Amino acid sequence: MFPVDVGKEIEMVRWRLKACPRCGSDMYIEKDFEDIYQKCLMCSYRVDLQRVPVKKVPVTAGMFDEEYDDEDMDEE
Image (tube, rainbow, N blue to C red; front, side, top):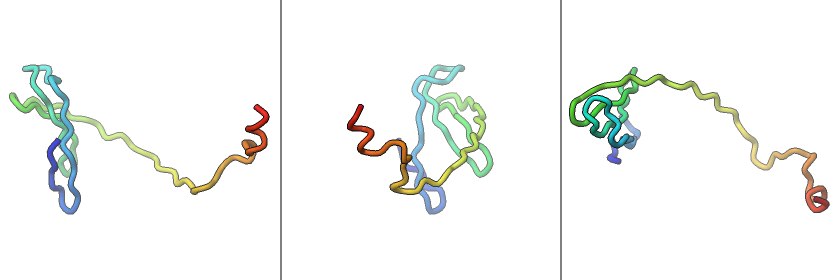
């Protein structure tokens, strides 16, 4: 993987080895301002990828379920 400078962030290029359906060469995943796509290194075949929405839920540190207390764990 090679670093790619994107503004202030540095992102790594992800490779898919021998994944090109046209020539069988290596493909890499690239991101533009609007699109994410796979592109072949040898023949420039391009496959557009879809963005997957991610729902992030904050987790409080040290929070646990009261049903699983240390005393209950010893009985099992």
